[in-house]
Amino acid sequence: MTQQSKPVVTVLTAPGEQQPPGMDALKARAEVRFACDEQTLRDTLPGTDVMMVTDFRTEALEAAWPCADKLQWIHATSAGVDALMFPGLIESDVVVTNARGIFDRTIAEYVLCTILMFAKDFPNSIRLQHRHEWKHRDTERAEGKQVLVVGAGSIGRQIGRLVRAAGLQPHGIARTPRHDDPDFVAVHGNDDLFNQLPHYDFVVIAAPLTPQTEGLFDHKAFKAMRNSARLINIGRGPIVKTDDLIVALEDGEIAGAALDVFEEEPLPKGHPLWDMENVIMTAHMAGDFIGWKRALTDQFLENFDLWHKGRDLFNLVDKRLGYAGSK
Image (cartoon, rainbow, N blue to C red; front, side):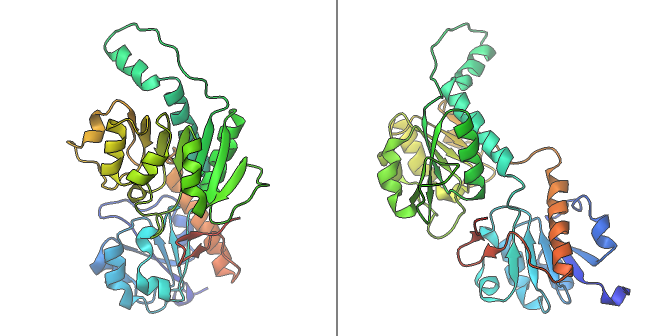
């Protein structure tokens, strides 16, 4: 294959970010360009066949979109693709794939970890240790607790599978109800969410950010939950209205929250969530394991091989729904 006949791949990274590891294998088969903002996208998009997106700044891609004269396929190196779903892309023939499958198990491990931390009161144990204070307490049993996974897709399924193995009882929320799912006791429809919320000890948000889920967890949702319930959000920050969550935590409408994603990231230093003793927080890292960047590149290369051979891609995203379909 001559240099002229090689496909062109543009990789969009954050300014100053290093190239994704493992790109040498791609460079042998394609002309690889790199962009990090609107101007570099305007320079690199003409003639580009494929994009690999590691930085999700919709404004830059949307602004440079008229320069995408040959683009056929965009691969997002994340499960969520909400930041890419601007009208020009949605209306175009460009297909979108995502990184579904890479982070599913590690996110499920994070969820199980936070459930056990709440049940065994580990946040208080750590605070007592820092104060050199010996204080015996009784803690909860996790076995038999009821878990509602809002978003029973690829990640939600792994969460259901893992917490069920630990003796908890997972139910799911999805577009289509199903009662014969091997990973859930039952999966309820989206319209049944508020009827289901009062019945669970842990409510896990694993849904993608879409117009339907943005702000879904507000004061109404928190009032519907048990006073003893804990919220776990590993989905997207804007699904939760942060101000309403703070009021619910302060007023005892829910007992606690474990948050990996936030409406504003990084969370400002003076934000009240930092000092709330019934809150566990991490810096948008629930799924990130040692070696995840290389795993993302390897997944893209596997799909690139299919595209290069004219075969069907995996992890195709429904651009109007905003997420990949079920396996």
